[in-house]
Length: 602
Image (tube, rainbow, N blue to C red; front, top):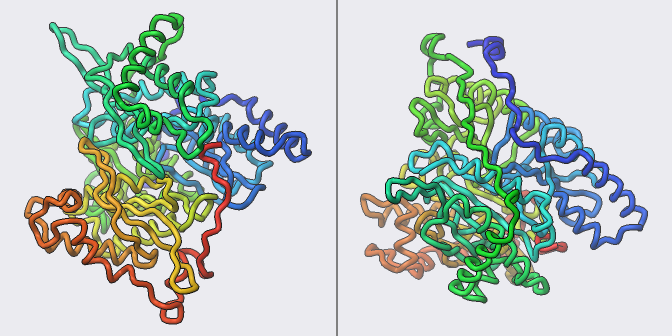
């Protein structure tokens, strides 16, 4: 099929159901920047204002910002991708970044241009309001919600309704710290125990009556100190979803620690108070909310089904030959939906990065191949096209090849997560972003994406202990720091093993500090040890889980055995022996640990 045929058969681009933007906010931001530049707005107040509107500080550069665009429930439509393509080219660096929290970030934006980005976003219904700062952040939903064979029902409408309720809501404008909601489809495809409020759809049948509801988990979170969330009750009916959410936010607003910035996330409140006491407090507060709220205070849940209309009829054009690499890509990038004949296709990015031209191409590709006409972002710095008909997959792959978006391994260990690190973050100590790319390139070169034993494992990297790269729930996780040998500093990472975020959620266990330039050899050595010691039914995640819990029966029985096997990798050479060892990835100069003021708690 030719490109002209594709264009003739394309859908009219779908636009988002919900307009998240308020156009007047761009003018207000521009006026406030002028007052700040004139010295009529103090720096701390402007910083809070800037963050509330979704403009984050850029590493050691006061005149630039990172604009974080919220995609509630991960949904993004073709016109929105096209606009982001234009904005990234005009006002950013010609590229954008998909985060782990279903946001798209535009980096290195001149402060005076931020309002222009807001204006452009408003044209397509997008906003960055409350994407940063001490408020309810972007409400997430698994990209497989609605298509997962194991889900009880689609939680997407509830995620969208929750996002709409809390956006610009006075209840959540000045919380002690940021606050996060995660909806998912099932235990396997989400991180519900690692956020403030995590929700799994559930159905209860009683006396012949079927009722929708949720399993709700509270008080989890990743950071310098991480905690796994607790289940509130066996079943929360859908009519209690909003009351429960409001109750938790109100308690956090009243009792959260506003003085100690290192301990003011809700997980610390739950830990300090004790789960039983906090649980009882939430249930009592919910009863108060239910009794005192007006009848007009409700979630506006739109359960009307999306139109599913296949845009192409590839099968009518006759057989299509498979390009080289298709089978490998199909294995590592597609998910068979519960809807017969349809797949979700995950686009592999390098640590979440995508160029402006690729954003433009993706807008067109969604119109050509997705039967629901939109994209869904996920938890792993990528984007998925859902409802791709099985007969269209080969042609989709061919199209992705032309625009550089056909890398394999999106759903495997070969697509590591890496936070922005020293490329833009004030708090970062290492270039975790670049390290993730180096690992991905090496592992694809070795074709590790084709190894079934590694498929469900993960590598996640943060540039500091704050866990923006989710290292605490990775099979193999790393967070950055600095080390010194004799008089010279070098970048290194604390390695954590055995983390996971499924039904058996567990935080990774710290093991060894690994020099940055030895991370790739260390991971390969762990894989080698696994292959030598695994049982026939093992995958890497299962084997590491047993080892860190000290219950394996092979030669590698415990974490101490792993440490002994890897110890030689931790010994630094002198600078004369290996000068490259003392520089970080992406930087030819000597390593140093220069940081700025963090804004997570501003």
